[in-house]
Length: 241
Image 1 (cartoon, rainbow, N blue to C red):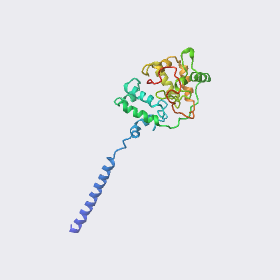
Image 2: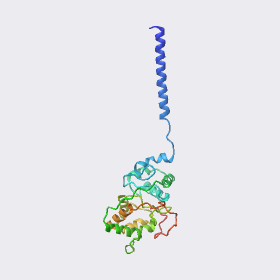
Image 3: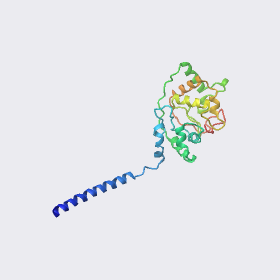
Image 4: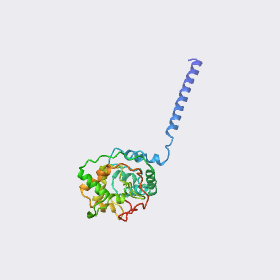
């Protein structure tokens, strides 16, 4: 092989190696780039179940988080972490997170304001619709049932710091949560007002309330009202629900 051929061969090899190492260097730079360390990036883990900003998904049993009072959301995260509220995936995900960080998560979702989903027409009889409206607006004094609106607000949007709004949730989710309160699988620190109230509900009451709440359109201002905006029937407005 002539000297000229040797020179050309080494030139080809050199250029090939240079391209190879250049590509490898570019690959390493790309793969070592860090994702942004922001609360938005961290909470993308919540998006498959609860939506990108907590707006909810098509799964009726995964609730909307956006816009609920931060105190309420913190209480729920702590309840899942401590096992007082039981759902294995949530219990597992939150088991080792400190309360300060749970509060940061809660504040993020509380600050999100996506529109409420469209209301769903009730799929129960007119008799149950009337019952649901009665229990939501007036309660049933003879059975020890205060109106839903007496705790969750006249527009059912909740009150700071720890009473959630009831709008934008599917009937099946509301029914499941009321069932949890009734049967003790969902509890709160004393005084456990929801467990007391739910204990007076019948199966028809639950179906009626859930169907009517899911059918309610969003009010002009869907945000929780300020603490003390209305008097509560129980001394549990600041308690973990």
